[in-house]
Figure (cartoon, rainbow, N blue to C red):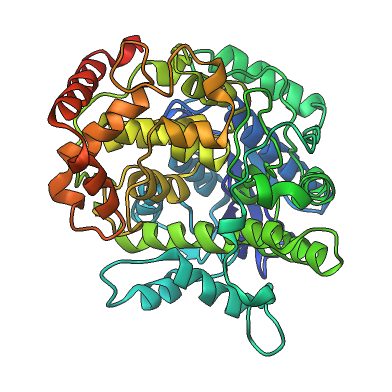
Amino acid sequence: MRHLILILGDQLTPDISALREADPEQDAIVMAEVSDEASYTNHHKKKIVLLFSAMRHFARELENNGWTVHYHAYDPDSPHHSLLDVIRERVGQDQPEKVITTECGEYRLDAAIRQWHESLNVPVEIRPDDRFIATKREFARWAEGRKQLRMEFFYREMRRKTGLLMTPDGNPEGGEWNYDADNRKKWTGKPPAPASFRVEPDAITRDVIELVDDTFSDHFGTTDDFHFAVTAGDAEAALAHFLDFALPCFGDYQDAMSDQEDWLFHSILSPYINCGLLDPLGVCEAAARHYYSGQAPLNAVEGFIRQIIGWREFVRGIYWLLMPEYAKENRLGNDRDLPWFYWTGETGMRCMHKAIDATRRNGYAHHIQRLMVTGNFALLAGVKPEEICDWYLAVYADAYDWVELPNTLGMVMHADGGYLGSKPYAASGKYIQRMSDYCSHCRYNVSEATTEDACPFNALYWHFIHRHRRDFEGNPRMGMMYRNWDRQKPERRDALLARAEWLLENLNTL
């Protein structure tokens, strides 16, 4: 054999760099489901089903195209617990001249693969993952010399590079780069939210569901009502469904939350983009075509594209620029354990219950539920960054370390001292009331802050402001909050802090 080519579970792309210039007559592919990758965190059951089924479908597609694929299906009794175990056996049997793979998306695994040549006694070639718009080196050059990084400026560079929503004379369509201010409407039931895209599980997926229920029964979530796409063709159909039925309203309501609807107008495409079933640039180009053909407004298309070529590329750049030290950041000194209700959803806080319950059922929650509900609460409560980061990595079907860690540690927890975001995303219950109808169904009163039935977010917000005064008082975007705090009567401040202290001592009972 000439080359043994390793394809990972988030590299389900036919033209992945590891397969470039490969020859089915001389080379072979190896793919593997192993316990070390499936169980290093408490991965959602639907996430495991999605990846195992998508991998098996991709392997079958490769075989249909003439490839020899050595596929290691998950077996709890297998002596092969790691990818290296599987590769070592194949190298011993096939004696390839070289092992080739595309760089992975996690520092832990990347560091391990870069040492494989020592134990395999065969060269290991790691090729760049060029499915991203910005290379690691390109991002590092952009970030060089900047004390703080701002996604907005990086996003503009990506717009120029791709030409997405750019006029022929080099200006942004509509005259503005960012239409986020137009994307904050509360949803009141109209227009009606479209039905979510569904794919009924085929025989391969049903086998994986049975495997996961039997073998990963103690993992978070459920396999019930699994309807994710597991092939590129079905992922393309999911994209078409979003573009036709949800994109036109996505911009207006992308920050909205509903007690009755899990999905609203969100695309639910990130699981497919992040595992390789959809090409991110192709997705953006398809959305842009809907703007130019008059099928979707600019604020919707720009907001959607910004999530992909803005935030997605930005956090990936930060991850590889700052790891592994970045994972240890805790600039706010948080030391509280993650409340147990993050794993059960059993809390009287309606917004938290709904966001966690949707996550448990679907392996998905949209960005405002993650940032301004479950993330906001963890920030206000002072939860240890490593614990909330591990939770986000485990519970979402689209979560991989490169995208989850900077989003959670930097954006949600502000644990990097503002390197990623200029201000902490801290808010009281009033924000949740403004963007949802959760509060009208809650046992807590969002209009109160110090009473026994007061919304916990309210007192915790002011406690956060108070205890981190030294960290944020000089922040120009936080000055108004400190002026508001100082204007309150001393007895009012004392009551807020006392209520917050009680809440912090009783987090698991809320």
